[in-house]
Image (tube, rainbow, N blue to C red; front, side, top):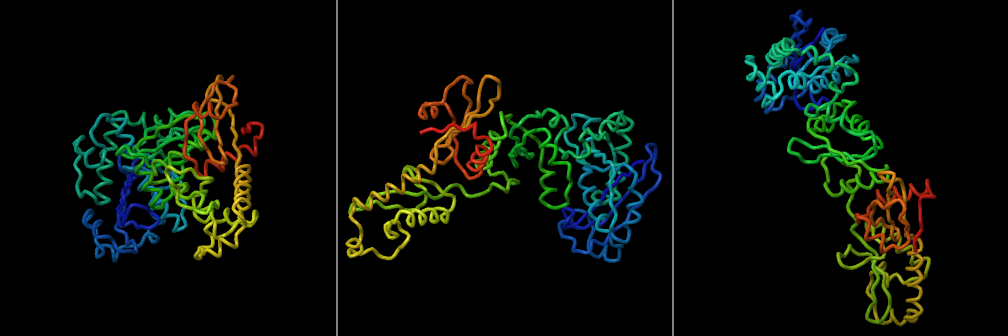
Length: 447
């Protein structure tokens, strides 16, 4: 038995919006055996643009039942049926969410008539409900109302059944097919073609723009996991509606994937990536000599053509490090620009001699450099004949690439000519330090 469903709502995601109308046709595969439709009071104001689209206004629903009143009826109609709708995940997410709020747990198989129509009638210009009905000579009455659209979906579905649709349906309803949970515009083959290897993947929208970048030890399994949970919140529903394509780059190891993922997120700033959207390194620790010959340390915004002793994402991080150096090596707060009160001539007279003070500064810098080691991480390559190499220079990530398996790592200058440079950031740096802590045998220290 099949339940062919259409709803009208106050907005695009279930967690913050209500249902204003529902229509359900129960079909036995041959004919309609039961029909239910009603307006619903969503207990919230219907936006004007929704009224313009559907014709349903606040006056029409003020005396209609609220969803909780008709939830038992809807649940009885839907349970043990195959839930059929045009763009099924939208209707299903709303009805499942609102049934759950009424203490009913809906868990049924789903069938999307958009995905089914692409298989039965391939090559059409559009598979939206209106355009599909025009292409197949199905008349829609009462467009953008639940009962009119549901009735048209019934007629389309019956045309699909008459054109060998049952064969496709049987495949689509298999648990392993993915057709029940994949986004509307993402094909099953796109998932099947993904490797079960480590790597980075990118989701694209209908304008071929990357909207999300991720990584996984098993690309196919990780990509699939994005779609198996149909949360009703706005971000989740918008994400599912926008995913149209997936591409990938296979990596040798998860560590390489972490580097590539973080680099791409920082480069592209995809709309649905939030966790790594931190500011780029904007501050550095700089050394310069003043007019009286004293070495001065200062935290300043990063200079494009001026090398820094160390880089920081946040000003606070730099100040903490500099204050620690001042305390440990007895440096002058004014010469380090921590104490910003005016520096008068008598202040210079109270300072240590230049050579003694500068020796302290040099010692502080040398100690910092020894605490920021230079080393290489060597891991498995993409093939049996190469190896992955990641270079950390003075505590910061320099770059990575593949080397021939027999290549010895000795000279850092030669290594830099082979590896690809990357921009350092906290995510990459912390991941590498965590990796060498777990696998110290894969770390080669360099001078």
